[in-house]
Length: 420
Image 1 (cartoon, rainbow, N blue to C red):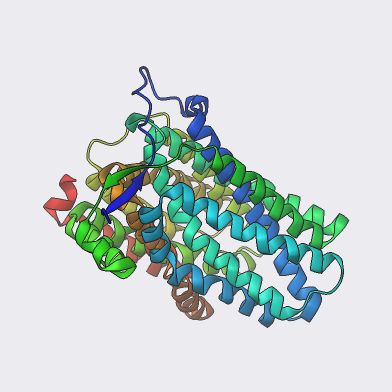
Image 2: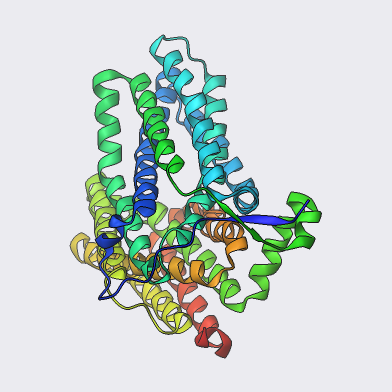
């Protein structure tokens, strides 16, 4: 059998004029991807809120809720690389359709079970596991399909629109899901999740059907495991991709610990602001990230990504370290908002740069490595940060900021990294 991989239709011609992020919505294929992505994000929040509430209704145990979330996180992390390889092997479109269809096929019956009052905890664990599997296949496919749907110069604008939509979904998704649970119950929230993914699958179905292009023959002969290893080798051989993965892993490890564990600690302790203060600081970060993502689609991309990444990494380190010593809530929120702008920019410019740099036949595998670098160390970050914050929250922020600064210094010391 011929060795092939999938790639979508030829993107539209390069547009003239200054970048306008919203202009990409005039492109039919991107508009369909954006609609499918937005629906999946809203569905995710429906299931997250409904699952948490259902577990507490059934057991009244926070420990049970934590175990359900672990059951979801494990397959997402373990299978992420498999999802990227499958996306390259079949096509992102087919992978997205299959994962969304699986979710609908299992969540809809769960909604019926909840509405009828017959649901049991083993079914909740099962559906949580499926959520993790779906994420592992859907997320790399969603990121890897974009370069084939839009012109090269529209990558930043397209990623900006998707990133802004992600931030907006954080604002509207949980309150909407909570309202449904409060008014109609958890069963209807699960039904809403199934409806979002079913409608999203229709938009994915409208995406262009894949064409076939040649890929690495040696890796396909070795099967799926060989293709995953080929993805590792490809990323490691490219100094730009390799450096970006290390930077992502270090920065996200530090940021997840500081934000997820450190912010609640200083809000409750130093600021005496409780949950409201925590919400204000997270909201400031989110507003900054939204503004940065939007700006990333409107301004010219950096000429040299290496030096720019070093600068952003150092800036984030200074901001995170500063939050650890700022004595009051409002200045801390301002600093977090400014730092958030940087993250919004890097999520737009950095992902676009990686998509542009990666060979089409390797898009799924490289995107899965990016997501693994970003999310794979989250449990370790939470555990270590909790231990540090329990002794001294300020030390946690200083350690997180110091790790980011050390990463920036190590990257800056490499002439090769600075020049990419």
